[in-house]
Image 1: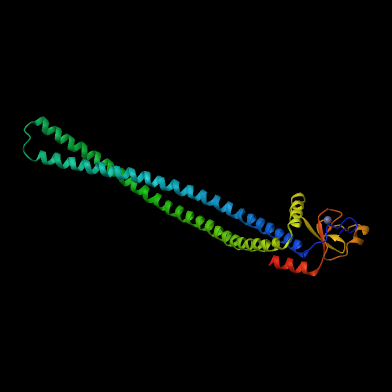
Image 2 (image 1 turned 90 degrees about the vertical axis):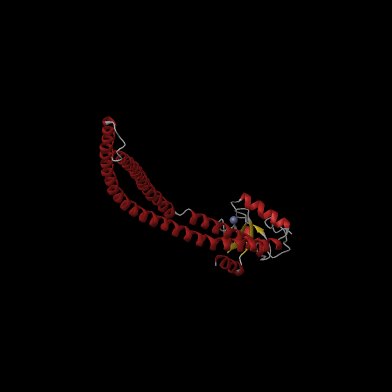
Length: 260
Ligand SMILES: [Zn+2]
């Protein structure tokens, strides 16, 4: 059936289904961009940057501590070994088995030398321990800062996850609803719908209210408007070429439902 060249065909289904399909897809894309927007959270990015900074600071102090602690341990071991050597030398010296004066002197020299070295090393160890204590204080503070920043990151992440979970569930529900409504629309209309959607920025169906196209936002010419009278008919907007359906309250009800 043709109404003055602007009607498509006589539909054999509820034309509101096409409007509903469009509204569902609008809602899906709105919710999806909302998810993307939430994921690209600026606060998360800056909090993560802050965390990286304090983590780097902590790692630096920590590796400084590990390095000094390694040096302390090595000195400790050397002192231990040298004490062992001193003990051996001294027991030899006092054993009465050494008869050569030269040998005796050598042992005595070695003991003096080792004791001197140990004394120096123990001074170094003491200095290292003081330094380690100071670094350990700094490490503790850096750790607190790092933990705090990490908690901040995790909190924002969990907020984001919470929000996106809710939205993802809504999208799942919308997709289910789209499936149902799609089943009610004849294939040739679906084909037309998808064609127009591809060509016209994702919007294939408009609603005409008081002869205004909901997408063009313009009043359609009076001559064309005269032909548009059947609420169960699908027309073509003479301005944007999309499929057009006459407004009825049911449409607002669907919109409201989809927004909640
Ligand atoms: Zn239009």
